[in-house]
Image (cartoon, rainbow, N blue to C red; front, side, top):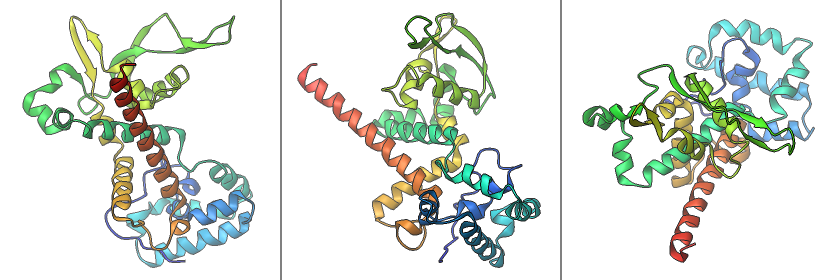
Length: 290
């Protein structure tokens, strides 16, 4: 197996809270190829076969003296213990049977894809949602920005189920609460239950682009969410370059790429296609007047 671990881009940190789960957060697992994961999911690779592949990757990484760059050394001992533990089979089953991206990561990635395409669609947005321009022209006076504050008092939008019809709808008893960025993403995820035709970013636009603070209209700026999701934003940029130049990040073909990259790239392409499909629908409606 060939590995090309070069450049400044790192897969480390894509997992949520990578501290107490050395098996899941191990760079060796993040570098499992798409071919290996697909074979495992189709029961063409046993847990023991997968363990051999992980150990091969693990040894390759550390023989290249990239330990300090790719993985926290304090997790190494725990990682090796878990590899030989009785829980190993159930752990990798839980990790690999479904998407390697967590639901929160998938939602954030979808958000970033829509936001960056929406931002690039008009020249004025590229300036208006640029942090330097925001400081220069004081756009922040009409915005909430998670770069400046950890929480903001936002509408506490909850989805409830109608007792009679079983239909999901917004709780009419709207309240507000101090909401951090993680709680915002969770709220967007819940709001998708009653906005099934909208992307995460469109839901964000619908509820958080036009709020009132006293008599002043204010919006929650999406740029900070992209900046705080640096690895996912880099993933978007990498996919765009790979698409433009017809290359893969790692040596070999699609099956030789890491499963994490392939699944992230699939999510990015799906989000981009949906964005452009909706743009075409807007053009058709404007042309037909419907």
